[in-house]
Image 1 (spheres, helix red, strand yellow):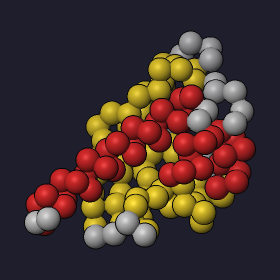
Image 2 (cartoon, one colour; image 1 turned 60 degrees about the vertical axis):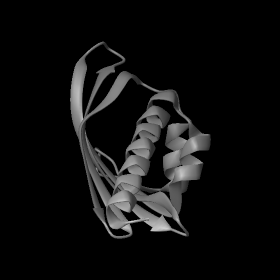
Image 3 (cartoon, one colour; image 1 turned 120 degrees about the vertical axis):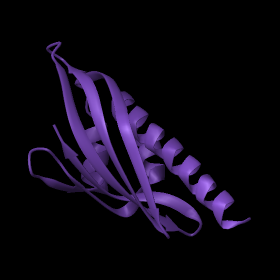
Length: 123
């Protein structure tokens, strides 16, 4: 596989994983997150807390309080075996208010597959 084909393959894989990540947040899909998060995953939350994979999965298992979550303006940068995804989100709160946020996810290629190793979320 030439470099251009490999880069396109990585970009396609990361965009698909980003879509899975957003769907998993919206649907509370603990199973999918357990597959795509690295064991050493950490997430910085909007309230300033830092949670590990177990804490993130526990939070994901709670009832989802937003609807219509969508990723917009997605930017993927592949830097060898590390990738950074920046994006904007839009969603509706339980009270019906439309809001926006941003996130930055860091992915690492480990044993031939991409895993999320870090996330930072703002609202």
